[in-house]
Image 1 (cartoon, rainbow, N blue to C red):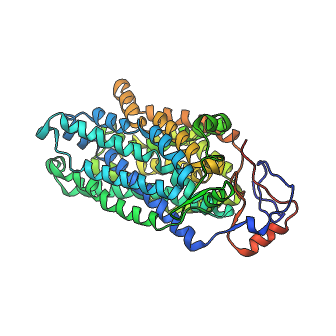
Image 2: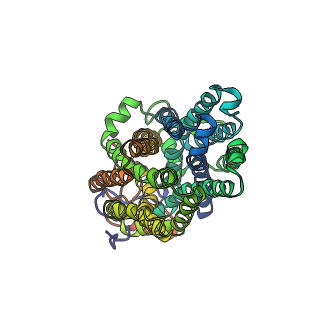
Image 3: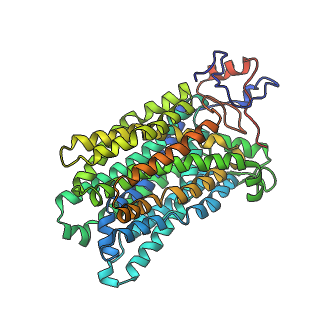
Length: 489
């Protein structure tokens, strides 16, 4: 649904208030250099998060041997357990990010993630210290999950509040570029280890390498985040609310618009429910393809470990090549068309794709085509969702509402996906179970997308417009009627 030609580039479907023109002082003109630094800092944190999760999933079978006496289900169960504290992390870090600012909270979550990832690589095996080994693994995975609870919502909010309104999809796509970069980095290291180390060496010490690498990567991310200023949207909201200024650190006042959780849920519940449904469909398909697929190819379809990993790496590299183009497309034509394309693709293409995966013994071309069919659908979601979710909530509650709803949905429909799919496949001996689950998720996703409002090319709820140039700001001031953001109720 392309924008109109009235000078504001709006797409219909969002409540506007044409009561008066925008004042020039209200409009934020972004600095492209600062926006790029903000995007880089947020994306690197996302890459760090998914580097750890992907490393664990790609080495799930090895981790089962090291910590669970060869039980892959035990290994995947620990993967799922790390998602339990994510809603708690969202409850803690999300409202805190709305209170004291996005920057400080994101630096804290990065520090916790890097430390817990590094510590996993130091844990002795079960053969060395017995049941203390899996206990320590579970502890550090829970800590990692707790910190991750404040990561995605904050990073998506950070980029959305820095990006110009008409380029939010493009810049938001870099957050998921970080996701894929984390997966590719983890998968590449896993493939190298599986190729050049014997299985005994991999179980003995090789599995530690990618976890130990995670620590230094995290330190880089912390440095980049601390070098940035607070987002323009947060600074303005803090100024409007009479925010305190302590040691040059802006924060919202103790009065409005700091909101209690009860009020947040009371005023934001329609958006929270819609966010839960969108994230459920998105995460189930995402975790199925990017996290569970290597384990599925090995355990269910009997692929060689390095073959399964290399297939995943090639698929993700191709996705990275087109991801920002998807971001540009949803800026130009709207978020809903791209999301519907991705969800419909999963609905129609998943079963044929899984049938091709089962023909891998005949030729690797078949599984590669199957993986590309699935990735074509997923990339439509990856390149769009980071711009959709932050725009559903008002500035004063954006971090908290998004972090809570995203992580609750991720707990229920994301982290448990690998374990549940593997368990059902083992019990039923039906290798098509993941395909059926993906089709079901696509149906939920289509319904949710049809219910959402279009937000492309529009200012964020509770914030004035953010534009890329002074000329665009002048045109917006002169536009009649002006485009005002909807106010939170």
